[in-house]
Length: 153
Image (cartoon, rainbow, N blue to C red; front, side, top):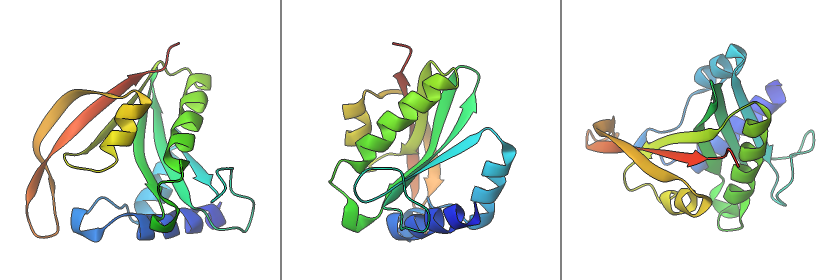
């Protein structure tokens, strides 16, 4: 599992711009996974699960709740973006979440996040907002938007 965490953290480092403060540190990831209701998926550049010892092009991290699964993080290394890997990971998450009993997916992100178009394409709809929830590295405040996607069908 440490190898998986190393690969996940490598994607995290490459995939999140530090200005937004969205990346988690290793301890946060390890603690979340140790909790037992948190799941991760590593994807290879060719869109398949990552074989042992190979680099990850992206990852998703989610948490199971009662009939819901919350997408905590999703990232793709910049050099592998715009190849459909995000959509593959969302489809994988949907199937895994259904198998765990979820009827809907949730996520929260900062307003203006370019991934919003991917989430809307997948079927997420805005259900709420938290004003000034995020703070950038330079102190700017940005609203958080909450999205949901019905996966019961």
